[in-house]
Length: 589
Image (cartoon, rainbow, N blue to C red):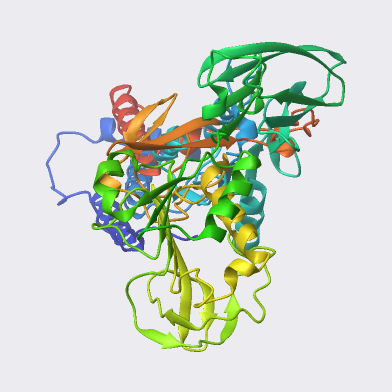
């Protein structure tokens, strides 16, 4: 047998003096008596006693020795199998996937049920560790209060895989029994919840209808379980109800909504906004009940051309073609000398072209295009080596054999056109501002760019880049709910000056951003804002119909395992002392 404190066994040596004292009779005294008749009768009586009766005189010794043995056990603490020896180690893994947000009958979510089930299992186990879908929450411990505190901290996770965590724990710790609390079932899984019918949006997008400036929003819905039935669809524009439609949903259905300013003339749909398409009635899993999209302004883009005396004719002709296509408004041609007069109108949402001139002060907002950027070293006949054919501005454009007689080398911004001496066209953008710079002017004496089909195509790409908002946005227009939202371009202000607004409230911006729930999200500050559409288009989350497997039986922890062995030994020692006292007073020992 093993002991936790084997040095305590030295107490057994006290048994030697106990035995010696018990048999010690003291010094024999000789007394003179008048007669021996009475004493002879006593001796005869003692001789008639049986061996069993003589044993009673040894009961006190046995009780004392047993008492010493019990006290020694209390100090040495022997390891008794099934009592104070380490038992089966456990690992509880709680599924924290978004499916666990589904509500069961009674209004509790599956995650809440998983927490309650885990607490019930705690009553039957000893040492246990706690994990969620990302990894460890509490290390292995016998302190169940720590595990309960950890269960209270567990939240829904957009990322992670509880089943993978359970498998990795089992492989890394072969002696540990792993339990997965999940709604998907499986081996060694405690089943949570029951199959529930659900319907939700699983994908969506918007496109411009050919030949129009009218966006068409298209979303696909699926029904998981249940029967075919009609659904009422609500369409909201910038938070207020715009329209109500009906749709029959069986297994799958597509819903389309055309954003037509003429149908809703009082809503200014052509100025852009946030559209939300949702099911009017709630179900057990609200995460997929709404689809959100951020629609840019569809009005023609205002364009102002500044020039030193007269604008380039081919530039104005190309802009006139874009005006006919309703991509830009009537281009304004203004001499650079009048810049200060019109500068108050230069804001985000207005495209400004500087043809062979530069503003008297730097721009900080809006979209700017320079032909003949005024700074940088000048070189003659730069050979074109490469261009950004995969970017939004030069996509689909061929600049092979572009002839440039003289250009400046530009070293600030992302390369658009690379020459043998360095970049001769660059772009840079951040939140609220973008600038595209060409190191050469458009005159035929300097380049043949305006004679190529690439020139009007580039201008169209530039205008669409601005109209769709990509040129001046720091954040993407649409993200998935599980994604961490990070800026794709520098912010327009310091992180501490911006805040995030959702239906759940406002908070200071901390990158990366995690949306609390699907829907519109706004990042604002210093007089500017950007809207982001957050959606949960994940069929694997929406399908709540999977049958769960039977749960393993819950172990029952013996009551005596919670009684410390030293305490049990002390109680037994007290019982022996009382027994010794009782037998003595009864005259049995």
